[in-house]
Image: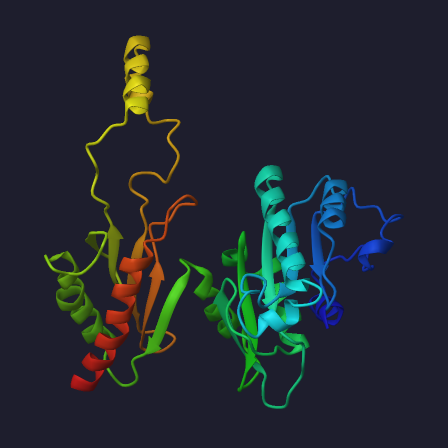
Length: 328
């Protein structure tokens, strides 16, 4: 299905399409993109990394992996993983490519799919960030997701997502764009508003719903501040700063003062930038239809997700939106 899609697009030049262990005579030195297509057997991490090392001009790697690589201890994936550890092996390959991507500077995308199967009427798709869902996916949909990631979707760079087939018509390019939008943030939730005005919902989010989170007794373990946007608000985490300084840190600062570079005392500190502590953005949109979306915002690579506060706000948002819609 992937090769048929590539030929249909006529926008990619394929230099080879071989089994992983049959690449000894293939010239990879000028290859800038590699696509690894796994099957029921796991790819070998050592072999994958060795092949990556041969591609000296590498810019992009796409891995088609399996649903459950990050959930191998949960049913039903425990059954698949029980005897051969296939999901753990595939996760090992994912981690190896992600680590090399950071070290060598190429981009990577991990696409997780379930059982490849074609069923009548199941031509639409649904995507989610990370390792989610359990359903099957049509071969043509999986192949198109690879090409979308390669050619048309910047949001797919350096991330991972899951894709399944759902009831409906084959997705248009606008549909694909909207599904890949879920990777920005990433998205945590979306809900159609039906006949309710998006402008009215936006006003409610800004003037009422968001305000309760900056009041005492909000229940959040990490406080937030409100930043208005054109389509809604951002609830940005602002962790309380501790005045405690350890003995080790105090000695480090003392040495910095002696050297005259006290201002550089935090340069070696690990963690996200001080203004990138994470948060949740609520966006109320008119297009492609009236809806509300929630996604993470203000994130850096080192940002620690505030799971408790995020869960509290998302649970409240889902419940309160339904209540507000019914009241209109």
